[in-house]
Length: 286
Ligand SMILES: Nc1nc2c(ncn2[C@@H]2O[C@H](COP(=O)(O)OP(=O)(O)OP(=O)(O)O)[C@@H](O)[C@H]2O)c(=O)[nH]1
Image: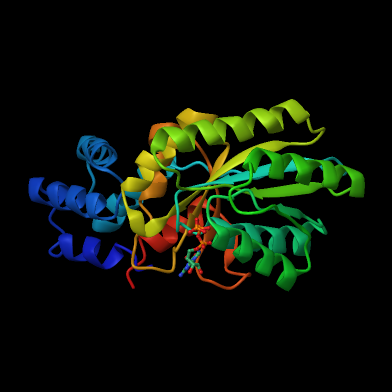
């Protein structure tokens, strides 16, 4: 991702701060996907700042304003218990890849042997893809045939994890159905099944958003949050030209924390979301 710092610098050329400066900052923030409402709110706050003399001072105030929106979270799994993470998101955002990355990271950093559940039974290719990741990483994948009941797959995975003393089930889900209502109903059903199992560890519902989809990501988050209630978000394709302002938009509007940033296709291109690192990248002058 390329930061907005160079554009910010050019807005301030001459070091004069006037109405036009604020309008330009607002446009820049909207272009960076932070959303029109958040951009307007931020710039309104900037306008109220008295006695700002330099560009550096204004950028610092802007950074602090943006930081106030951001929420940084953890999966916070419970050790030695059975935890379930349901991974949600529309088609193609990078759900399956993110599951593999998370599995690999949690294994490396916390010694967890996750069990993967191929809950996207809507697409045969999604099952194959998860099985391939499982094979490459050496993790067991619970799966059924395409078209099988995803709730049954997740149920089996929990059962199998309990039997093997495994502490984490990472479950894939479908991102597309015949229509939105079908998808929402299906997700509610899977959620109900996990709730019914009453696992003794944490149960987290995590949404994957693709940075390149811009403000559409906020709409996706609203739909999934309303359907099952989200605990956190993973942003993928941060290696694209997208500025990732969608993070600010989702945090501000839905108060859901971001957990991870993904920036590539390899298993190790995932890292915990950190507000300062994100703001450094967003405001970078490169
Ligand atoms: N550059 C880049 N590509 C990514 C990233 N995450 C995923 N991808 C790619 O995005 C494409 C879609 O990823 P999938 O994991 O198949 O997405 P999905 O959400 O599971 O999609 P479906 O299986 O179609 O539902 C793949 O080509 C991934 O390699 C990322 O952080 N950066």
